[in-house]
Image (cartoon, rainbow, N blue to C red; front, side, top):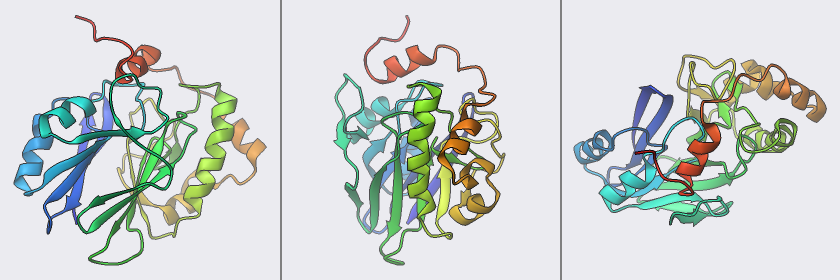
Length: 246
């Protein structure tokens, strides 16, 4: 399996290129900014992009997902019930995307936003067990995603509690590759380390450790930071419900 991580600073976000080197098939997760670096990285690793996946409709930046998919001739992928007007390939809970020897299983993990998905990845050349999970803004290193950008803070927190429970069911060794790190507006106590494991977060991520739903909700709705500027407008733009300003 090939994996490349892209760390962005404006906005603070993380994107990924990954796939099967042997069969030369790849995908990009949560692309930001200009599309040329992803196309160049795919070419350098010898992979053709089959999918471009957004884990959710972002509220802190303009997604490059559709532009990259068009440039690469790839499918643009969102959760099947995402409130998007522009065309996309919808995936449901449990769907499997095949990238040669690399298998991607979709987990619907609402809470940060209702349409949020995580991507559980297995490299069949190495094992039948999952190796890593792309967690977007559900589980990040040191914190969980804020819950009021697409619902009420409490409603989002109760939904996120159930989603987090699913991630807690993964083995400790599974690597956590999130969509943001410290400096992002989508979390409060994010680490500057852009990767972790389920086991380490289970032990040392304060929000991830809470097992009582009411206590979890109280923690998630306390001290919510200011929303990103134009958050609703950015979600609408990423959903194809609005046009970029001239």
